[in-house]
Image (cartoon, rainbow, N blue to C red; front, side):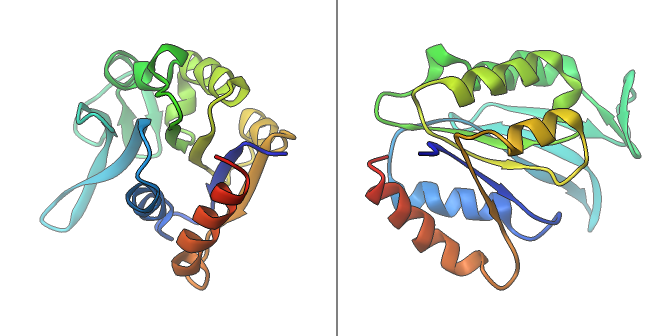
Length: 175
């Protein structure tokens, strides 16, 4: 039986919001991170990664040059690896809890350390609740195809009902 749930879907459909709502409903200990946009006067300038314990790091920004780039965004791998990555390492897993990985996407996957940590997390005996990009990338394809991953596509039509459905499924499966 899959013990990892990964949400996928188009950008902006509400995957991160769905994860945050699930955390509220489930009220279980959790470790990990989520991502959010950095906006100024209505313009998206980048993305920030936020650990569930409150630590933050800029993941990518248009105005912070670095050697790594996805589209117009410069990816800040050293800050991401130092501040955020430890939250998904096995020693951080809460007892009887969840591991949140939002998101397994192009920017995060520029880090080989992140890719390795994702595999360790999915292999561990702690359920992972995360999001994964739709990109046609060998690593993302391999993660989506794992036997222990339940892949759920989020759409505008199902995103509201998924909170209840996923919470119920997790309870029935003994998460």
